[in-house]
Each structure stands twice: as C-alpha cells, then as structure tokens.
Length: 167
Image (cartoon, rainbow, N blue to C red; front, side, top):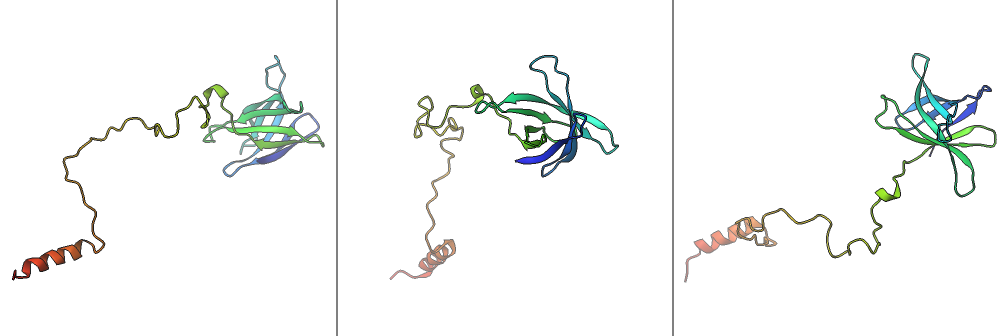
C-alpha cells in the first residue's frame, strides 16, 4: 500500500507527506553517515506543529533477491503513535522515492509448522485446546428436549388430564 512520495530538495534531502488512516505527517530523509556496512543510510525526520524536525526513525538499504534492486526499509515510531509504522522506500525513475507500508516479518524459526506438515498433529486427533477442565457430572438430571408445542402447551395438557375424571 503506497503511503506517499518523497522528492529531493536539491541538497540531498528527500521530503514529502505520508498518510495512513490515522496518521498524516510531513517527513524528510536526511543522509546518514554510514560508519559500518550495517549502518542506516537515512534518518527519518518528521515535522512538528512548532515547525521543527524530530527524528522518528532510520532507513536501512537492502537488495531485492529477485533482481538486485536496492530499496530502503525501516520504521517510523513516535510517542504520538500507538505502534511503529513499518515502511519501505523504492526509488522511481525520476529520482523520487515511493513510500509503501511494509508488514514486519517474523523469522522462519518463530513460525509454526504448516497446517499440512507431516510434523504437525493429524486433523482428527486433537482440537489443540488440551484436556477439558469442566466437571464430568454436575449432579443435575439430564434435560430432555422440549416438544414442538412448547412448555405452556404441555402444562395445559397435563392440567387437562388431571381435571378429566377417570371413567
């Protein structure tokens, strides 16, 4: 899902607006001096109501495995937000960046076995909820299903039988 577009201001700073259902902000990407290969490439700055800039995140450079294209990935986080906004930025032909929402991925070792995995339980063996803690018997007599006529009709019939004299 595309959130916005960032264009260079000529000084190497990319600026633009991003918008989600509950967040609209003006952001800027300022080049970050990389100290190591794993260092971020840009710091993410957000404009405040007081017309100043605050750091809200970093973007790291990654390479697509499929075609080798470089892109930026990171998150925007602020005390004003309920949770971080994970983003990816892809460079366009005109030199601007398209900002997209990016769902965070869990490492494969944290994921459960696939549903059709031979390692998992068979579908009919267990419901996955464990043993029941409900008491086996509650001491109450079993409840018989009510007739189609309903309870009042049954009571009226019983009363009528009581009032009818035996022959």
